[in-house]
Image 1: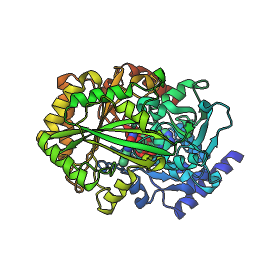
Image 2: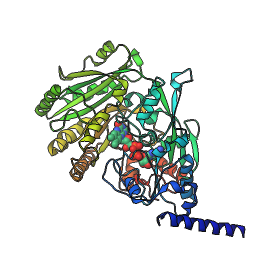
Image 3: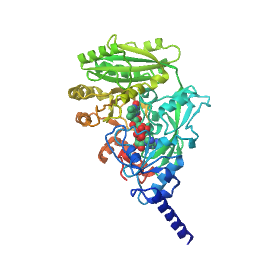
Image 4: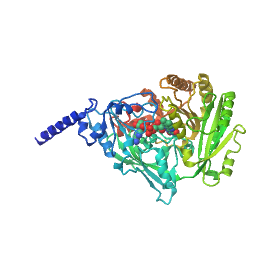
Length: 522
Ligand code: FAD
């Protein structure tokens, strides 16, 4: 009888709360009895904000958005859905900088991770530890809602910084670790997922687990590059290195793609300090086409005079390739850099260098973003396509996609990146998928529409490129993938699919987490 009274009491309480705050029919009303109920919002303005992302290509409305105060809220929410007879989807949303709805949850709950950065969590969710005598053991324990730019500022106060970066720093730690986190440092240190020592993860069963290569290693490897499928990462222990103060930042221009890629591959071969050569700290590259400005949002680099000279050369050749490198230093850099660049085959005289502070170098694309924002050109649709192309087929990709499709279609607006990485800096036990070859290229077609509605033609161009690769037998892997069918996912993961599926059954058996990725349906 006591339990009946208690049940009656709870149901009365819920109906009172329900009357005070309108509730959604999409979620079980029992959710309102949890402590987190006051932090669950169903107002259309809030659910609408969480229904789309940076890409602005899809709109998927959740039933509610949770603004968690602490990890307990996340644990309670997932546990509730897991134990419910009708589980609902839950998606962590970092900064919502996916482009195809990966951080959405149709009729489920989006967890706004950024709200963990609050006073309840002592204000600071970045703790640096350099107590170890070995530099190889210095790290920062970082809340996964933190932006990389904030991690940079906090670690620099200790004279340290993470080793591996993304080009753009206004992304959350949890968001990039769910993919890979790549940039020009990846050839040397691997992606960001290769630079993590330990994590706290709330699994799809609502269990908070600490994992590392030594403890709960299966979860550790599953989560890194795991597209949010196995758990919500709440803390990551990130590897740090002593931070330099200055950077020599250089661009070299080519019209010959063979010479360009040969030089890139040569430069990334110095990646472990062997033979006494420390090598470069950053190697990337991009296309300069007659329609696209040589300075785009990724960096304002060239002076106006150089800029017009480069554009007229690009007009002459159709495409120029810009090899971009950086060397970190404190006092002296000339001799070492000269030795590294000696013998490269760039167009004589077309070498441009500048010295910038380390922080300005890492945050180099921010000024371009602010510029586009001021012109109303940042919050527009972005039908991006990111591919990993095996080295053995990069020349075919250049002929078919760059010189073929892109030049013929004449639809270029936004940066196009092309740079190589070393496979041995990735760990195959992780969920991230890359081509089989020792060296592969990251191709980023970071196109943007000029208005809110004219993105379809760019999407058609992406389809044309994918079709070309398929027809030509180029075994690409998509980075930041989003597919429509199970067959496409199976093909994407290849030999890793069975492991990925088994891990899902183990850590998120009811397929609650990150439904917006579209890998599993609940
Ligand atoms: P969201 O878009 O919010 O989430 C992405 C996915 O991760 C979702 O499935 C979400 O559910 C899941 N997720 C989010 N947080 C967590 C968590 N704590 N635990 C578990 N799962 C979680 N990528 C690069 O590698 N290199 C770059 O240089 C780069 N530059 C970019 C520049 C711009 C302007 C943009 C828009 C994107 C760029 N990206 C780059 C892509 C970016 O890394 C991914 O889109 C990343 O997922 C975005 O982070 P986010 O915090 O916005 O994640």
